[in-house]
Length: 415
Image 1 (spheres, rainbow, N blue to C red):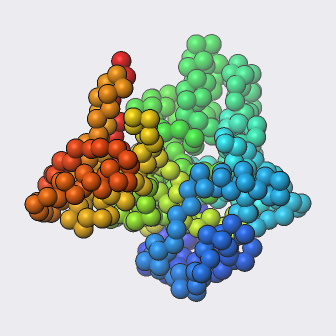
Image 2 (tube, rainbow, N blue to C red; image 1 turned 45 degrees about the horizontal axis):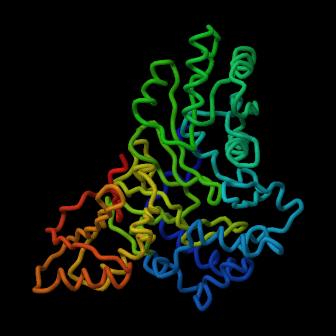
């Protein structure tokens, strides 16, 4: 049986890196020419020079709220806020809506969202019948998996969500080979099948998304005869990473460039440190350059034991947007970053908000290599200047703060 979806998965890492960054200047130039939003965001950038990770890291990060703001501002003339390079018609078969609402285009290429690679790694093969329980209503999740299943050679039953008893009947009568959908709905189906005696024994594999798949739930699926894997994809970017039989993190897709940055900034972090996932897509129809997903993760060292040679991430580890309201004022991770940027001695920082019954207390904990006289007072003054709020500053030795990506920790009691 074929182990890999294609030869891209086993490229020498240096070859992959060279090929990705050989393609990137053309993608940046294409975005500048055909995407009005990116022409503005990347104004003055010489596309030909964006040919390395260092050069890419100098470009601005566009986050979800930036995309939404531009879409809202341009509703009357462009539903996509100037980011899409497509025009309506055969080149854009569908438009989707995510909460916000944020509108996303779908291009006409087969496997537009590149999910076939994830499905193949989960064991789906040509001739399989796939029970697709992602929503077919407004959002693209169901279509993202459906087009990938078709690219693998599968047939799809468009089950959607809800109507549990009818879905169990369809599974018993159509006898699908695998499930795609959220892990929570798969659990509902299995529990209902156990309760009613429905035969769902043909479901032997699954690919989930949209929610985290905890190891305990994954093991529970295994106890009920299903090998279930998870994928990480978004409506803006398509597939970003996917799980393999090794169960050691998620392997990056071959069509994206991924960075981990400090939340609220565009500053890249070293391997192993938790930060925000920033993705550059090589999709010419929706050429998002340094798009901040708002999700936290970290790069793993080494490569996948299955032989796939791309980088791996730990998986979804929370949200990077830790904006917190303190004494009636919003404080953003970018403001914490602005404070620490003023002091080269500071390595990392975490703003802890404590107190109860509206008695908010701010403490900025900073890892520093020095304890110069007056440093605490200088940092405290900078906090007040940037946030308009007072904070106590604690100086810590390097490595004291947890590696969890948190820049602002809300430790207040709400009881």
